[in-house]
Every structure is written in structure tokens, then in C-alpha cells.
Length: 202
Image 1: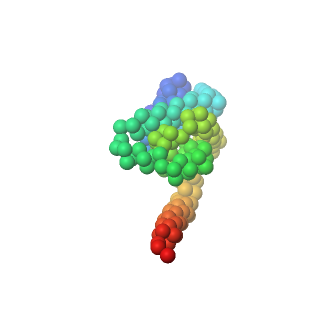
Image 2: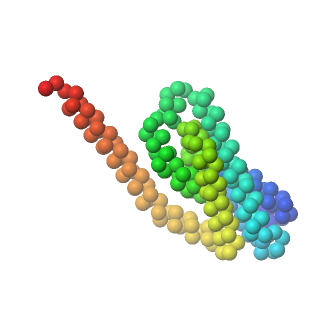
Image 3: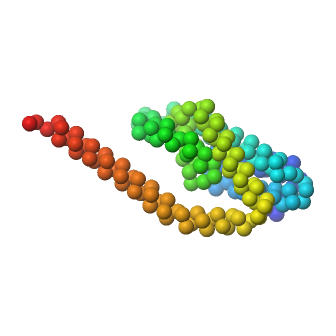
């Protein structure tokens, strides 16, 4: 695919970048959005396009895809069973999105493991549209801008370094998430135990 992308004209290459970034931005897993970035890096070095053009096309695709993903999730929620809708609108998850929603939306633009659930949940939970507009734009700008610049400057070797770093950090991230879940479970049990004691007859 990379060889085919390299053979495209600059306009078609930008359109392919927009299309892949759009699908990736929607939260569809497995989209190789980095491939047109690599081809565009070669095209920039060959003076067939510019870094700014590559960033703008990718940014437009990624941002538009994230907005469509949000809207699709919001409309799909209405067709789900009532108990699923209650989970999406529960006070606990609402507090989580109110406190960390902006950061999650920004970070999810770069990390594929977060992109799908955060994009879908933001729409399904009714996360404020204006906030999502701004945070998803910032996240798309950071994701596309930083990666396109790094690939232009350093080439595919930066991808290998990032994958190694992800592999090293993943066990620690998973451990922190597990500790957080255990803490929430213990906290819930303690609250339930305390409520039982308060309601017991004297």
C-alpha cells in the first residue's frame, strides 16, 4: 500500500490521507492512517507538496471523522435498550467525563486503544458538543501535526521507537488501571457496608 501511495499525485495523496484520517477519527480500529503520512513525508522531501498542506489535509480528515463518530454514537444510543442508556448517562460516568473528558478526547486522537471508546462514549453520554468540538480539534492538531512533522524529519524509524516505548509503558498503564478499578470496587464495598450499619436497628 505504501508503494501505491507513493505513486499517487500530490492531490490524490492528500485525498487518501483525508479519507484514512476520517475513518481513523471516527474511531474505526485498524485503519493505517500512518501510511499516507509516510508517503506524504517522501512527497514533501521531493518538493511535490509542503508540510503545512499535509498537516491541514490530515487535520481536516481526522477532525471531521471524530465529529461524525460522536454524532453516530449519539444517534445509536437512542436505539439501544434502556438499561444501556442508563449506563451511558450514569452520574459516575458523567463525573468522569466532566472532570477528565477534555484530556481523554485529546489523548484519544493519538492512542488507538482509547480513540474508539472515548469517541463513542462522548457521543453516547451526551458530552457537551461545543467542548467536544474544541478538544477534538486540539487533539487532531496535535496528533496529525506532531506525527507528520516527526515522520518528515526522521522517517519510519520514529514509528519503531514509539512502538517500543508503548510496549514498555503498557504494563505500567495496565497496572495503574487495575489499581484504579480495585480502588473503586473497595470504595463501593465500604460505602455499602457503612450504609448497612447505619440502617441496622439499635
